[in-house]
Image (cartoon, rainbow, N blue to C red; front, side, top):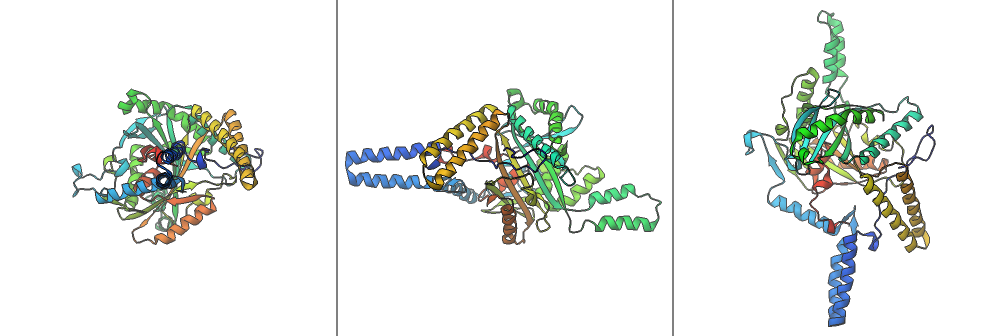
Length: 498
């Protein structure tokens, strides 16, 4: 993105754009070659067996091409069909249902994390500044994820120049991640949950003397117990996923923990320069967040233990739900009913730093709402190739469309692609951006109303969103910000993608 004003004025940024592939109708390379192949086959059949057989062959091949051309929310017809087949196959095998706990068939009566999180392991290390940090290992992808608690400062009573500087510093964080060889993703998570009042009660106890007057103690504790009613608290965190780049780190989590511990203070300093105070979360803190997300009823117990400094006693291999069921458009887990949406298209117009404010802010009608923004920086060499290819494709599109509105739109695409090249030459990075929204409510909740509320918030933020049909459980796990990067777990052949 690029700023369009001076540093002392409100800045507007160009929204992200997807690199275009100017094949047949803008389709991907494999699809383009498939279409060309159907034309060649039809012509050969026509020359060999005549018009009738050639027409029949061409019609059949055309029907095979149509699902690739017709896209909805970025998915081809083949993608939607294959996803549906996989989902119904899982239903038939009852793989969408999970039961854990003492009376289940799980080894040791554990409540292990289900689905894509099942193979993960939790480790703990210490960085060079002396902070303990939890480290989640995803063996399938050889990835390690650390999570940091975050306290955004907000922009109230802050000079415009400082706000612009914070935005610029965050851009430096993302660009710097692309210069490394092992940062796979950076995922800020804005999580809202009902306010329990535990923290306020703990503070009230800490400042109240045993011999204080009864009336004074009554006033303090009454305020602490009454203040949190109908309130919603915001808990922010930032997850960073690293790829193990050596055989030693792939096999030995301890070696990866040493590497992360060496770099973590520098990463913290870079993020804090963008106006967000951060601290590494311990293994126990991460486990508590995960358990609370799967089992909303456990929030009070976990917060009480953390407020008093006690151990909540939940281990990583026991942090999952007692039961869960993945449905077509919902995810049921331990008395909770969650729905996750993903961003299918970002803002088409210019944006500023407050574009997502209404979506991430606490909402009284959506007390359990989680917004995860997924940044996946491209490697520096890959970014150059992607931007250059996009520029060439934009020029080809402009040359092919020489009249009317299409021509004007194509020319704008060329200008945007050229600006991206200029920004890359100045040291900016190229980053893939995704966004997930998860809302958790009781089983009896009015989901159509919640769907309307979330849709309205998305429209206000210039976002196009859609439900994560057929993979609600995986999307729920991805929005937690604990190392699940959905494209790395895709089951879709690349030849069928748009």
